[in-house]
Every structure is written in structure tokens, then in C-alpha cells.
Image (cartoon, rainbow, N blue to C red; front, top):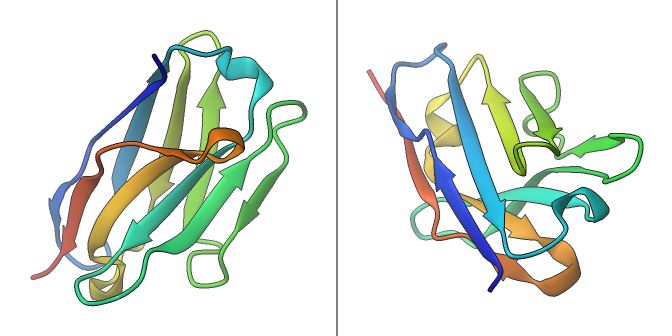
Length: 114
């Protein structure tokens, strides 16, 4: 079955960096756009970034533009989110999504705090 498994979250100081990974299985990964979302405590889940299946066209939420980079490795069936210049307001559970089938991973916690 389709499965998305995130990893790479953790505790980081403001200004630091983390790279999240989302390992996919159960579908033809190279044919689909992939996305990242996040949900902070007490807030709704919000869109972070997406990457197309064809030409690696990317799109970002304004709040992360210039700081986060989404990439993919079709051979490894993995999508990444490189997060730089992290801020306390980036603290959230980060979820990988397969938009075409509205399938979500289990999430990985990112905490930005000194």
C-alpha cells in the first residue's frame, strides 16, 4: 500500500538548519507531485512547499521562501525539505503529502528553541 515515512526532525537553535526526508513506497513516485505541510500547536495544518514530478518545478509558502528548499530523488523515492535560518515560529509537526491521493505521512516534530 502507499506509505510515506518522514524523518529528520529534532530540536535546533534559532538560525540553525535541519533536513527532513520523506521515504515513499507503494506507488510510482516519479509520476507524482509531492508536498510538505506543517502544523503548529493550536493551529491548522498549513502548506509549506511542493515539487512537481516532471521538471522539478517548485513552489513555496511566503513564510519559508528563501529559507527552505524542497528537492526529490526519484531513484530513492524520497523527497527532502532543507530548512535553513530556522525561527521559533517554524516549530511544528511537518508532514509529507502525496497530493494526488490526499495521503499523509505520520509527521516529524521540528522544535526551534534556544
